Length: 199
Image (cartoon, rainbow, N blue to C red; front, side, top):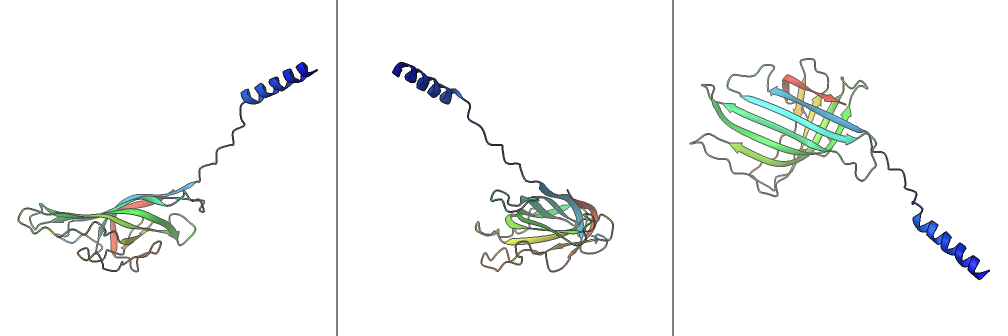
């Protein structure tokens, strides 16, 4: 009898060791809300002579199902102004790179009639200036203020794009001019070409 019980115990133990463990079903990934696009901007309905090229590119995403610790908004925005001299040759560039920390939409339920707000921290501010021009003093390494953009999702014209701007880059202690997830106070620029899509 003892031998029989021992045989049964050993067989049961072996079955428990070799039986595959039941694996939990993977948690589904949250649906993503994505804003992408590029536009040429101007302070007026047409690009003034000598103004150069001001562009805003955005690639931002956020989970459509909030509440997950791993589901923070992410992405990148770049606003860049390339200056021209009176003869039309490239004169210099100011480029601001932004790490996205919020993406929200407001307005009508139609995605093409809404306005998207993107905020983020300035990752870098760089200047390219021609020879013989004074190089602006770059901001300190700890200078990463919040900035904000608002873009229309309707691609018809006229349309306005907002940017909060940045605080004094030569003064790292200057107060921020934007708040996370809050749109800029005014729509500063006209969109001349391009647009943004929300998917």
